[in-house]
Image (cartoon, rainbow, N blue to C red; front, top):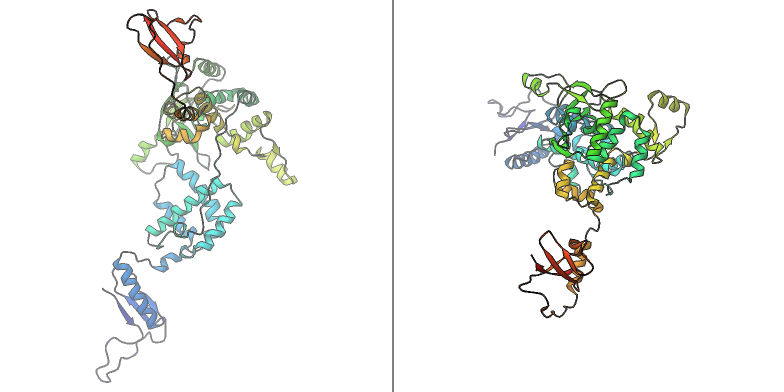
Length: 486
């Protein structure tokens, strides 16, 4: 295979007079042996001929397998690689980028691992970073950040800066695993208490959250024209989002899926009452991305839309979710007795919290607005709405997600299967002789008891306008039914 070693200190050809290789102008300066001539591989110099020969052999073999990675490319710091190579090549949706960029900046670039060269990220570095990470965030967030780092290092492998992804090959360091928690649902008194603790203009958000299972962003982006009161439907067409810099925009709901959710008559009455008390405000915002477009295509894709926002601030503006959570939602949770405010320790912290009106609260994450959505799911499943229908109403990508998240809300889950299995071992009852007292060609049926609710004690029941039946209990708890008149 192509490739050679050049002695930079001596001429390639001997002197015709002396027969010796004369010294070059580089004699005694720099590294003496230069390896070059391998296609796709940059040249590299060494002090010792043995090192040059070894590297030439390894580089030729790696290049032949298309696995060559120049160690010098791995000397770039992780933070530099993220800023100069990783982000510029990404094409994420703004909603994805906003969430990911914040976590990467704070918990990867902002920790010592961000100052390590790529090729120095080994098991020991990952172990130390994981320890630091778990001291800053909970396990569910740490799991997401680990995935972000693995994605970054996988890109470095594809860019030929690393041979293998350290997050994948270092088996001794396990990724953080979130603690599986069942979705929390509230009872009606709790929901009513939270609703009462909110300003009157925001109470309809609780009604729609618990009555239609909408996400917070969908609630804040809901418009008056999204309600079809005649058909009893809410059209979930958009959500309201904001960048970290506070630029607002509309975008599709999570998963880029619009959907229609049933609107019950009484929930519709509450929405109408809200619209009458707090008229919707025409709001114009960019679509999908609030940054200025750089092309005609981007201008079309980001063209602003105007909707009559259902929920607005007291000044008639669109609502920033963080401000709403800090100044309205958490105080309502406190009024309902679900959380309490943690008082600051220093005068400086007291002054800062009063100025920003942002306080520390006890465990607020477990009591976010998403609990209204969980409550909606629990009520539906308690009334035996099938998971497929519920997944459509909630905008899940698959009914599997609905079952995984909310199966514990299904009453008697598994009880029917256990009863059937237990009946497997029941001794067979002797078959009863035919009942000769029943007239003609009667039809023997066995139906569940609840199908005959309202049957007369005499044993004769009307089932429809033109049918009479006679029944008796069976050994399995059902009813043996015979049609005696049609």
